[in-house]
Each structure stands twice: as C-alpha cells, then as structure tokens.
Length: 109
Image (cartoon, rainbow, N blue to C red; front, side, top):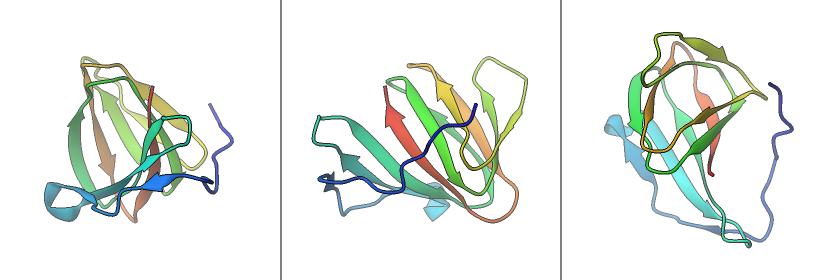
C-alpha cells in the first residue's frame, strides 16, 4: 500500500485562507494544480474526527500516523508515512490521531 509521496508541488495556486475544523485540531490549505486538480495539505492534531465526503478522496499520510474507520465498516486500520486510504464519494470516515501530528495530502478523485 506504499506510495511515492510528492515532497513539493510546482506551479500551483495555493489558497492562503486555511480550512479550519474541530476548533483548529484539523487545519488544511487548498492547492490547485495546473491541470485543474484540487488537493488539500493538512495537519491533524490528537483526537478523533469524522469527515463526510462529497467526491471520492484519497488521503495520503506524509508524516505521523492515524487510525481510520470508513463509514459503514467496523474495521479500524492504522496508516503511517507513505501509506494511503481511499474514501468513496457521498460517504465518510473517522480518523483518530493518538499522539503527535498527522500530516496528509488529500486528493479529490
């Protein structure tokens, strides 16, 4: 399940206004790629947070670790740096961070 995570994006537009969730425990910035693709780059502080999806998403873990439960499932799965998980559209997931900060790239598929 490992992937080659980018260390930088070139020639992009970044929204300077942060997306702030759960009283600042999850914060991201929107990045628009030259081909029109949209991603968010963010940080998740310790806690348990539920997110709903409109479009399908891929969450790639850059640093730290998390535990994820997809909506409609009971199985929890741990993810660390270099791993990813996909979330169907019109669904959601619960993400838990026990310690430290989990850094991620979210791609809208």
